[in-house]
Image 1: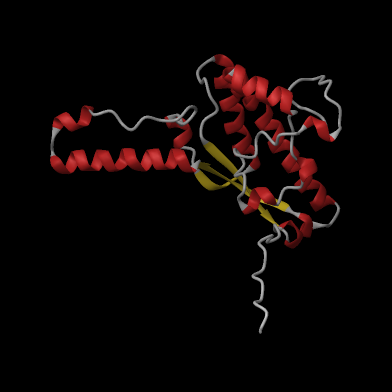
Image 2 (image 1 turned 90 degrees about the vertical axis):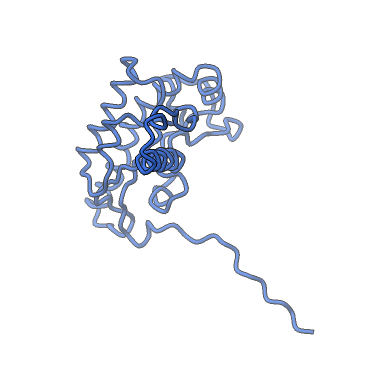
Amino acid sequence: MTCKYIEVCTISQSADANWRKTMSHIFGRNKNCTRSIPEHVWMWMCRKHYQRSRYRNALEFHKALGRLVPRQILRILLWSNRNEDWKTPQDGIVVGWTLAARRREQLRLDDQERKRKASVDEDSPENDSEPSSPTTEGGVVPVWLLNERGSGKSALEIMKIALQISDDLQAGRLSYYPDIEILPNITGDRAKPKNNRAKPRKTPQK
């Protein structure tokens, strides 16, 4: 395991590195599709570079995400293609992609839509100028990206979107990685995440 934040990271491969799976939130984090992806397929960042970049230089952290997300998509595709080539589809095959807003961004959009409808229903022009609820850092998704939401997208379509986000970050058109989720649709019995919930204990009979 190596840190992907920079080309050469001096952090050793020991447990002291305290690795961070820095992009899992963009790919759904604890959703079943994300949990289906093996650990070795993920790109990791050491704790030192993760904290220094995210908390001391947020802009550079988001630019790094812009560069790394397309590479992470390729890693997932390579893993899927390998399983297909090796005739082990049960280990996981990506059959499509979904682009969605993350939950907090979807809640903001829903709230904005409710206010818009309430303003129309009341037919009150002054309500149109009321500001929407404040957003969290990196929360707002650009209009062009909202229009790209949907399921059944091909790898090429999702890669073009990821590259456009990266270009916008590097060019300064964006100052944060938008609150979106890039969700792979993964088939395969062995790829299904295991249910780790503890079974209820039986109460001993007296």
